[in-house]
Image 1 (cartoon, rainbow, N blue to C red):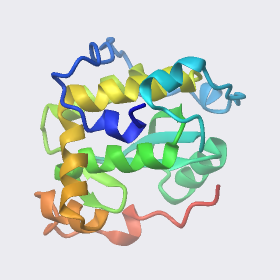
Image 2: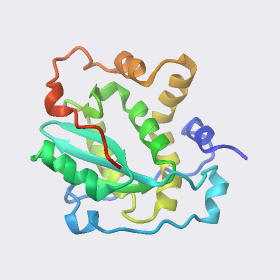
Image 3: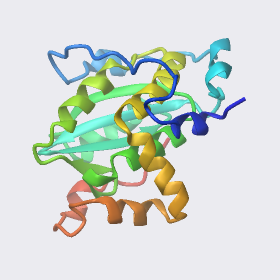
Image 4: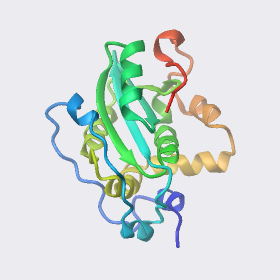
Length: 203
């Protein structure tokens, strides 16, 4: 059986099926009452058909502040968002979505967006249309269905070619930070580290 990571390294032209559908989004902000909901994750039998192992559940979150997006992970979404609101009060919550293998999901997502990397978990698009596409597609992930999200993430990565960057990263055998620096067009820009780097996460 093909592993989950191997599925991500397939090209978008392979027979995995269509990418996750695009749905119109009227507002990118996720209501706090949705964020504060808790759910018990139950693995689906269909996960094995896609090489997804039902382990390491958690959340991928996207925040917006000024002209930048922060992409990170947590196993306690309420605590993490409260922390973010403390050290960056003006940040806007784009979404908090559940995934199996959430540590690997965060890594693949951040590698796929390496060319927009600024510092830490922060990304800036400077008018690139990819930002609008990404926000719409991230909002299309379910607030509660961890199984569907974990399968759709494979289509999400392959449909954009982001999975090709994860493969390139593996071939280079470099650290994630080195890869991001090499790929980013913003790595030489001055960044206010104290403003955009959060305290170490408490799960």
